Image (cartoon, rainbow, N blue to C red; front, side, top):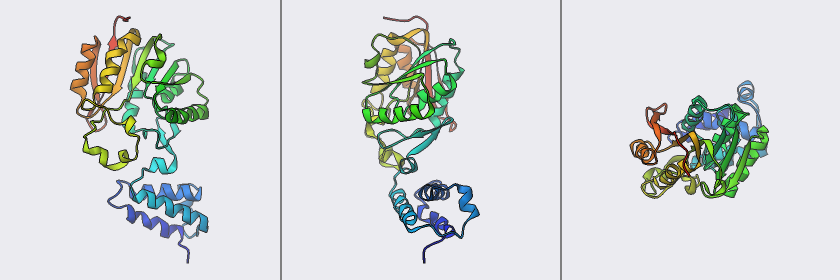
Length: 282
C-alpha cells in the first residue's frame, strides 16, 4: 500500500544527524515533489500521493541523505526579499551575506549611485540592492558564464532594469569606470581548510569558495585595486572568513582606505569589513 502524507512526513528521521533541520528539509522536499504548500500537507495528512510524485520525492530524499544541499534540490534560495534561482554553478546565498546588503543601504551615499558587485554569482547582492535602490545603477561581474546565466534569469524574473552583468576577471570588464560603491563576497577559504569536506560546501563550485594565499589572495586583489575604481568618498565592502578580519583591515589600510571597520554577524563573528577612499586615484 502506498504511504500517506503523514507517513512520508515521518521520514524526517532518516535525516537525523545529517541535517540541522530534518523536519523542515523533509517538508520542503515533499512540497516540491507534490507541488503543494506546507498548509496543504497539514490539512490533508491522509492523502496518498500519486506514484510519480512518490518516486520524485524518494529521489529527492535520497539525494538529500547523500548530502546535497536543499537549495540545489529545489533550485531556489531566499535572499533578502527575493527568491533566487540557484544551481551548482553558483554559491548558495547565505543569511550572513544579507548583512553586507544591510550595511551598504545604511551608507551616506548620493541619491544616484554607480555600484559594482564583484563575483556576483547568482546576482544575490546586486539584485537585493537594486530592488531597494531603483535609482542606483549596478554593474555585476563574474568570471563564470554559467553563473551569469543564473543571475540574468533572476534579474529578468524581478524586472530589475538597473543591473547589468559582465563576464570577466574581477575589475577587467570595467577598466575605465568609477563607482561610489563596490561590494564583494569573494572566495576566501584556504584550499587546505577541512571545512571544504563538510556540509553544503562539498557541492558548491570551488572557484567561488577557494582562494590561494591562505584564502586571502582574491581579497588582496580586490582591496588593493579598489582605489583605482572608486570615486571620491567611495566605499568598499567585503565579506571574508571568520578569522580574517584583522588581516583584511590591514589590506584596507595599505590601500589607503579610511574609516575602516569590521562588523560582526549574528554569531558574533567579524564577517564584513568596509572602508572609504577620500580621494580617487588613477
